Image (cartoon, rainbow, N blue to C red; front, side, top):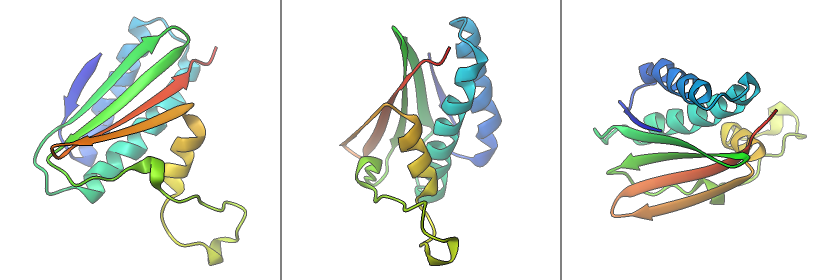
Length: 134
């Protein structure tokens, strides 16, 4: 299942609805919605925040492959940003000593079972695999 969303924070409600429709169509337990919604929300929000100059919509795709979900976000006409190379966040460090940023990507990395990144011709694509929860 695939859908394009306007690169705007107001698109988040539509993204959550997109996830709900997919989970309902696949007869998947609601337990899967939290992690899928959080992954899409964090990555989409970063695309809105850090690549606002692109007027292109963002393509979200979700597929079921056996006991896993494959999620992808494709942003068009943007500079590269490979989340697989983003630094680690030391969550044990006191808040007063942490550098702001990176916590959302940290959570995404914790939730996903695998993450890959592709960049070609100003097209940035993040693909994540998440095992189904029962």
